[in-house]
Image (cartoon, rainbow, N blue to C red; front, side):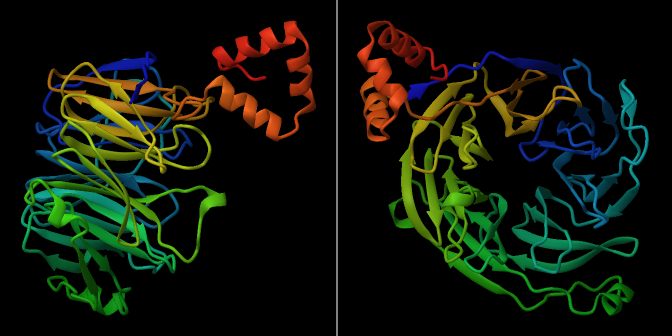
Length: 409
């Protein structure tokens, strides 16, 4: 397996322990530039923006922050920051003014609401095809709930209870392009939930204490459960992995990845395992990112010891070794300044009150090409310029030099 090295990075001081679902990239202030948002068990939430060494905004006294999300929770066409703590409080921060000023400024929530305690994972997405963004939370109590902003508060829509512990919750489109929820269960298994739209929101809003248990479809998928080395191992799931415009098939569902703590990574479509990869590290975090810039997203899996695997959709893999143990990992896009485009990035939260952000983690390709493969490809394409390089010694020397240093021919 080929190893890669990244050297462009930022280093931030961040005290306290970080839960893996309280660590993400997102455009919180709607300026078309992505920031890094992180929360800790002490109730602090920091937002890092640009290449400054200190945080851009911060909030304190929020309880034990266990999950964070960025999305259009108010359904008004702009992003907000949603923070949920383990005690059962949901804080929503809306950035309407003063988004360009620098400095470590405090944040105040625009909405605070009580929800069930013990949230471990948070998702913002239209899960019932009604055109509105819902808040999905997964609890350590083996419960998944969905909420929607109606009038002036979050209203409960759905509730599911499970027999086994929940790993993560992801959104994934089915063959008809309708969304479904994937709930990871131990042993590399998951449950697919298909939500129905709320039919009468006005009537439901009047009944504050009532939760709607709407009609739903629940499908259990064991996948490779019988072949797992440990059927009780915790599972992560990642949905809607983009295949690019040229590889999409409207008759098939979206790709999704399943990883287990014992080092198994699977690529799945329509409940059929396309391939499986076994590594010698405990995979605890999954992300997706277009590393090569071809429109097709790679799966990025991280282990507790910092070993990071970048796997494309053909199972071709490279690895990056971060030199410390990590408590949280995420991959996404980060903007060094408002004028420059967002760059693909990895972020690691360590156990030593540090955050390391590697930016510009692009690769020209996942696998290496030999000179023979390059020459064969050029000859098949009938490249006239290529023939000129073969017939002149000086040009041939120039061509091999460019191949070795990966410059454009």
